[in-house]
Amino acid sequence: MTADHTDIRIGTIAQATEGVNYLRQIIPHGFESFELSFPPDLEGMDLNALASDVKACLDEFGNTAVISSLGVYGNPLQDEKAVHAWETLIDRAPAFGCDLVCGFTGRIADKPIPESLPAFKRVFGELAKRAAGKGIRLAFENCDMGGTWEYGNWNIAHSPHAWEMMFHELPDANLGLEWEPCHQMNSLVDPLPQLRKWVHKIVHLHGKDATVLHDVVREYGIRGGKTYVYHRTPGFGDSNWTDIISMLRLGGFKGAIDIEGWHDPVYRDALEMTGQVHALNYLKQCRGGDCVPNPT
Image (tube, rainbow, N blue to C red):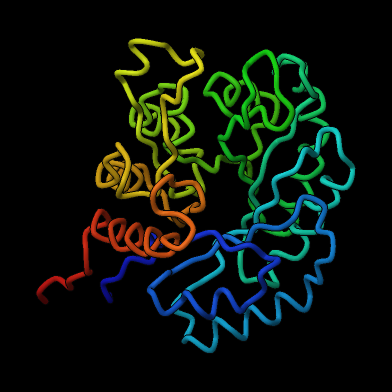
């Protein structure tokens, strides 16, 4: 058996609106996977043409990279266009060579999380059935989008208590989580015990980290009007990604960690791709470095 790392690929998020020109420029850096992120309503998108272009682009580079997932981050609990976007991406995912669609659950605006559960069960119950019939999995990102348990406008899937309630309502095997440590650290949650407990439901990761300013937390708390956490590109934050990847493998995870850039306060703008390529190489080292075949 050839030694490789295709069980856990390291890639990045690419905006579908950029087309394949963006992919063509960055594949040579060594990215192994891409989540294609779409507008919440798919406005202006020709998915058939894009899928064809993406396939040709990946073929051009010897299929060293794959499309890990399609992403759409709207509010399907209150926006029919967002529901249609999920339906469309579920239907078109095979054309991109992937079986995973990721996004926000949505939320009933400014209501406590439990009040969104009936709508969540109705909307994603139907989407889960549609997806299962096509061999597609669905995953929910763990970003709070500025929301709390009591209030918010986008996503209920940002705390383990909410996950317990969601998967109680919909225990479908093709529903899971799109997880990253950053969003948990933003809430001062230790991500590693959470990962160990929930790895069985995690099907995709966003590669994003955080730096928590504990001195600010001690002096001002998290609602004192002072910045207490920075979102970081992996390799510049507080997380031990060697432990994260080890825990993923121990839990049987197979999939991709796709870097979510455009958040780092230092490696941004003209240094954006510098930061992302550093993160790519850092995560590959945390994965174990180059694969070395065992003696025969």
